[in-house]
Length: 235
Image (cartoon, rainbow, N blue to C red):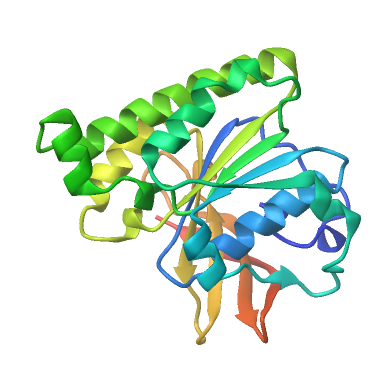
């Protein structure tokens, strides 16, 4: 969880053994900013990072950085922006993963679910569940690429998605559950612009109430502001 915030708050980040991760949250909850801070923290340790996004969407809503990070830092040179238009572009990228001379330490895909247009996917697969089929195919290809990459080194894929918080969320949860090992969820905090980030992979499997750690943050004055670790009850 500490990888989503300025490293000065967490001097020695812990290593999450999962290679496929999901950041799930409602619209306008700072997912792009959290993803970009994650990318910066990975690049901070001299690793190359690929940040995949839709260019028009990113230009209209650029990510906010944590206070104290120099926008001209050389660290940003290790973050390669890759702009794609749809799910086919994402599959092409991962299909060629084994051909790259140097593999990234992390691949981040912003608003993953938005790349799958329902109508286009239905027409492509001649199936009313075309979007689900396209997502499964893409996640399977992603899984194979990352498995290959981790035979040579260390590589993680982090996706963000809003659809898991909308009306078709059960379908998205079902698809992601098969492929994603670790899920971080965002919920609104007790004040406007305040949010709580939880690591759902650490939630208890029984029905007893337990307390887990969660990170409280806000988006204020065009900054991603970490407000501290809070305890959260999970049923």
